[in-house]
Amino acid sequence: MTEKKEELKIKYSYPKSALVTLHVNDMDRAIRFYQDVFGFQVSWTDARQLGWVEITTHLDGLFIGLIESVHGLAENQIAFTINVSNIEETKDYLISKGVDTTKIERFAGMISMFFFVDSEGNRIAVASSSRK
Figure 1 (cartoon, helix red, strand yellow):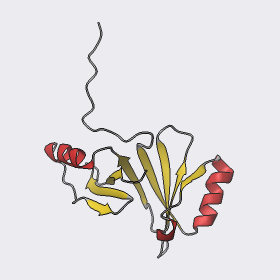
Figure 2 (spheres, helix red, strand yellow):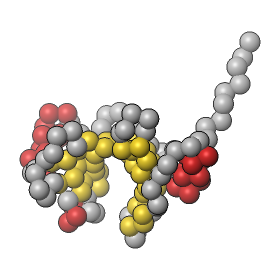
Figure 3 (cartoon, helix red, strand yellow):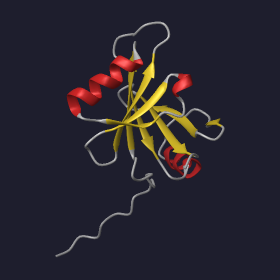
Figure 4 (tube, helix red, strand yellow):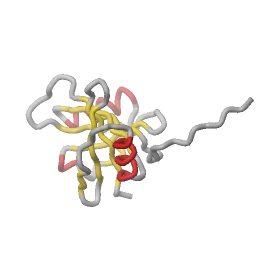
């Protein structure tokens, strides 16, 4: 007997469907670490002036975002971002499931995003890229 596969309610953005954000004190040192130790490569630097760089991993669809901390690192500053193709539809879907979300913030020419907190208190970002 074959089971009918349930259609996904959220349309994920591919090839980059998940992003883990890591806060760093020294961007150049962090980049060298991920390149030298893991063989990861820098994939996007257009927001470097804002303290943001993206790195590809060897895992399909998983990227690392490095954000340079201005005031030093706080413990456990890690964030998970889910990248979607339609941010408005995703926000509406989450609201329909009883999830409280923030308003959508738009950063011209780069990204639109909003946040929610999961059942365990983890802050999760949902983003949609407007860059090509």
